[in-house]
Amino acid sequence: MKYEITEVKLPGTGGGVMAEPSDEEIRELLRSARTIAVVGFSTNPAKDAHRVPKRLMELGYRVIPINPFAEEILGERSYPSLLDVPRDIKVDIVNVFRPAEEVPEIVEQAIQIGARALWLQLGITHEEAAERARRAGLTVVQNRCIKVEHRRLLGE
Image (cartoon, rainbow, N blue to C red; front, side, top):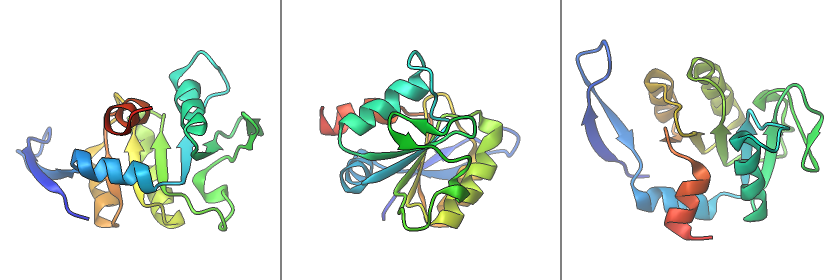
């Protein structure tokens, strides 16, 4: 997969280079993905962490809830972590609704399960963890809502 290289200043590092996928690459990711594991899938229907994955389900994706406090969400079995998802379930995208400080551990788990992409929801970024994911071959999208990007790039 090709990346457009954008130079950005990383806090405390004097600068650096990070690769963000183009709109076309994100469009292709969303078109080709079948299964999305949502880390932080909420049981509360009033939260975006519930509404967004619910919409992904309505759009035809298989959504795997990752929530250690729920056994099932919207009819899908919930797992405590990505590592608990059965190996016969191929996760294409790991979508994250957790605080930035939890992202490095999520990245390590995403790499271990062979996910194709890491998607950090609007307001979530972690440059070091994102770079680790990129080095492992994952497409990384940060600080964007997957539902909004789906609507923008593919329509409803």
